[in-house]
Image (cartoon, rainbow, N blue to C red):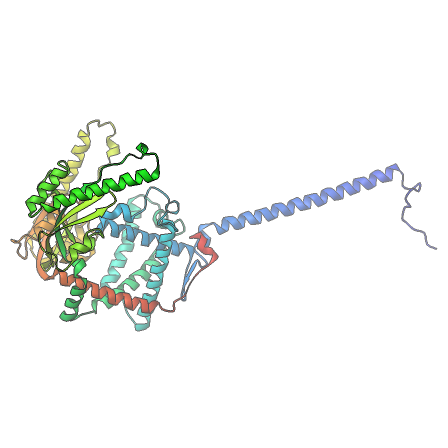
Length: 521
């Protein structure tokens, strides 16, 4: 029988020394296992951290797919570029075409978009994301259709694209950025590069160019245009009227013991205001009667004769008395009463104009005074130095405009004016030579618009005009009259309807998809 090397528990061989040695070996093995676990945990943490850093890096935002439209894919960086681009376009549209409604149509630009509600269910950020998705779907559809039919961008559009790209590079250099990518990061997200911008901007120029090509080839008969005007005249026509508000007496809720008593008092106050308005309206038979009744109601608010007079296009009339003003059988000096939550409006209809006046074609050069930062004059207690700097900047702008007008008059052709506009204008229409086609009375607001529509205007006239509302000088060159304004509106509506129907058809069947990378946009 062979001998065993095992030590029998309790035998003499398992003495204190051997037990200590065994314990030492077990402790060493335990420490080794612990070190191994620690190393593994550290390695896993390093991998996870590296993965997290990589996933949150600009590099990963430039690869992969965040949003798919049909067979076109957009990385997080590309989608973010489009998001910001559409946002800037929207803001520019509001400030250019709907400035008076900017406080309603725009979010607070000093606060994060994801911290402001667009409506009851989504934030402004979510709204612009949805807007971006809709625009991308349309642009992809236009791009694909253009490619299929062999559309090629015009040389003019290619030049505009190149000018914009070059302008971005020039701006980056002028502002002291070491490279264009750092400049773009400020406006289009940290992952945007010059190459991404050029590629995506060319995509947009192509889609817009194809849409413009389609639009320019649309034409409608005189009968179609007139029929559209008749359909839309309630919003195209302008309405002249006078109005004032008879307020109900304010009711102090604290003076009543119950909600029922308070509400009854409010209703009585409004009923009394209605009765007073009815009594006043019964004595109004002329504009002068209207002026005097309003002044008797509130001598401060209606101190001036024109304080009750308004001229609004039909699309701007509200729902309170707008439908009444638009009624086809409405006659001058008709008076109506309209209840609102604080009292009763007294409204007098004066006139309805079909806006059939001739539109004007013109070109403009805009010269903005150099901005003056008021913070640079913090020690200027009475603003004397600041006001002087503003006046000097305005004078410099006037001198520049006068010099450009002089240069134009040395060669008074439309081509020369257009060239001067392209080279010098601060207006957004500079690339088109400052062209303002089919302008209405409100297209060029303020003093320049008044000059343009002056009855004495003759083709070829040009003048330097200060526009208070725009805080800029305009050199305006008058080309001549064009189609009636109301028919121009109808023609534009027909084109809009046709383009919308066409684009809706183009987008039928185009699928979209968000990937997990969408969260990185």
